[in-house]
Length: 435
Image (cartoon, rainbow, N blue to C red; front, side, top):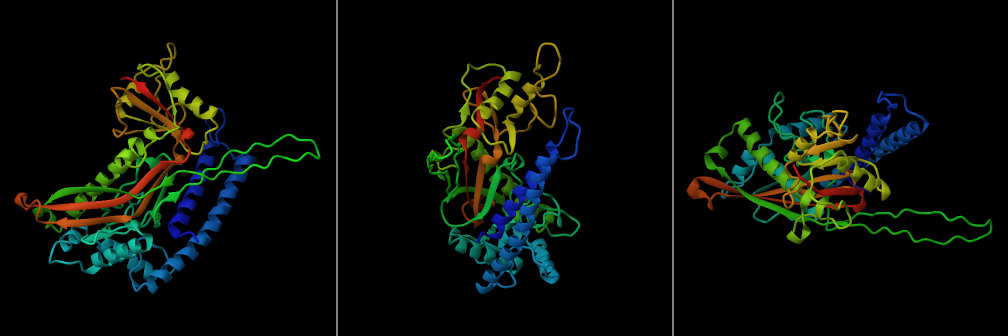
């Protein structure tokens, strides 16, 4: 049986599919219209799947709670879990609101020890690690479970446990939406698999099937379908950061928020950079630009044009790439160049003249897109084919000695994750644009 995290992710994929159907329901002039028969059928099919998943999620959550109770941690539900008991939900919210990152760090120092809600959270993370096979170092002072790693909106009540509990301490003050902020890849339609367990996770990729034309009594040719795809492998992302001892001793809510946000943003940048240009030869996840088989334009370095932009769309379509969540990824400098580059000689329209889309598709600019041998990179693809995995949460080792001369506390952070492209032909890249 799939766990509740996997089932919620499947439900979110169906919700995203419904959203795309509604967004695409426009006439030739871009005006919203009613769904046609095919669109209505697909929308209703997605709704039926959502209704079915809701039942499965409720069943899986009940089973997981029973497992936790049997493991001796009854009364310490995973942050963000949902249930029908109002009293239990109230206790969960209280625990999420009371958690303090700075208090957990102080408790992780030698001779201190964790207590209260910070100890409860640490116990949950350790039990999750034991069940999932993720490694928490023996000398870790505390850890966050996967359910407290991420959330996608800044609200105490509206995240509905889709990305876990928020780290807040006051009903009227939104502090932290999750340890790591929502990643750009998710906004582009990337597929995030969190709460993974064990080792490698294979991704099935099916081939296209072609029918044969035969005489009425002629036998067809049996075809063996291949389900061989890339694998997500837990890779360790780690960093040691120094935090002022005087700052860490503060009990201010704003200080707690600042430290959590800075650590989470650093972790997010490491993963996002790897998703674009990581190379597993360097122990990183394999990023889009280093994936064998992606479609690449061959040309001399040149200023970007409208033709360069739409050429990438043609490459994907000519290779029968899937079209679930198409979009462009580029650097801020290339974005600025496209905003000042004319689409043609007569209209006066710029290549990028719409804040919401580029050549009819969504786009995202980020400084994490690299400059390669002096040239800028334009990536176009189906980002639903970018699979990202996270094993467990994050573990922290608090070292008050190494940087004691600076009155700093060294915080060692460890997170396990990976990314792969399920279908390389779902991405096309131009690496030869100048600005």
